[in-house]
Length: 328
Image (cartoon, rainbow, N blue to C red; front, top):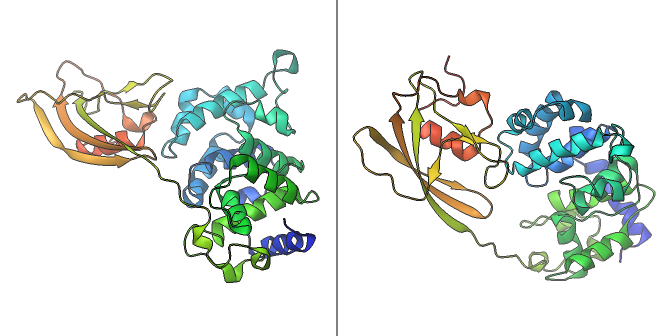
C-alpha cells in the first residue's frame, strides 16, 4: 500500500509535471463533465478539439438541454461512440428538471450517488466529477490507474474489485481531485503500456513490478468482428446525396447516412462501382463496397454538412465522389 511519503511524492510530481489541459484550469462542473465523457474513449489530442467545440456550442447544461439531439450529434461529429452524445443530451434534460420531477433544478449534482444516477454516467465518471469538480473524497478507477496498481503490486490480472479497493485505500482525501488526476497522469505519461519510464516515476521505490513492468498487467486479447457491407449512394439531381436518419438505437444511432446492406449489389449499368474501403472500430472491422447511382426521380438531396455523419459515412461519401462539406 502507498505510504504518506508516496502520496506526497506523487502529488509533488503532479504539481510539477501535469499536462496543461483546459479542463484543469476551470472549476465549472459542466466543463469538467464534458471532458470526462469525451476522454472515455478518445485520445487527449483529439479530445481537446471536440471539448472546445462542445464548450463553444453548449457552454452550459441548460444550453444543451434546450438543443435538439440532432444538434448535439452534429457538434459531437467525429468524436465517435455517439451513444455518449445521446446520453449526455438526456442527462442535460434531466438535470434541468425540478427536484419534484426527478431533476436537479438546473445544477449538476455534487455527490457520487447522484451523479451515478444520471444517464451515461458510470462509476468512473461519477467519481472523477465528484472528486475533481466538488472535492468529494471518492477514488476513481480507469485503465491508467489499473495499470499503475497492477505494476505497484506486481499483479498480472487484478480484478475490478481489487483495483477499486486499492484505489479507495490509496486515496489522498485532502486533495482527492488532484490525487485521482495524478494517478491517471502517471499512467498516461510515465507508467505507460509500452516504453515505461520507471526512472521518472515518483513511486518507483515502492513498485514491486519495477524490474519487469511490461509483465503487469497481462494484455487482454480483443476479438474483432469482421463485417462486409455494400452500399449504393443515391445522388439527387441537385448533386447532394440522398441520406436518411437512422433510428435512435443500434449502430450509428441517430446519425445520417446512406443505406447499407450485407447483400451484394446487383449489377446495373446505371450503378457505378467506386471502390472498396476498410474502416476500423474498437470491436468491428468493416469492409464496404461503395457504389454510386444518380436518382433522377429525386430532385433534392441532403447537404452532408447539415447533418451528423459517422466517420464511416464520411469515407463512403468521399469515395463516391461527394464532398462532405457544403459544395455551394
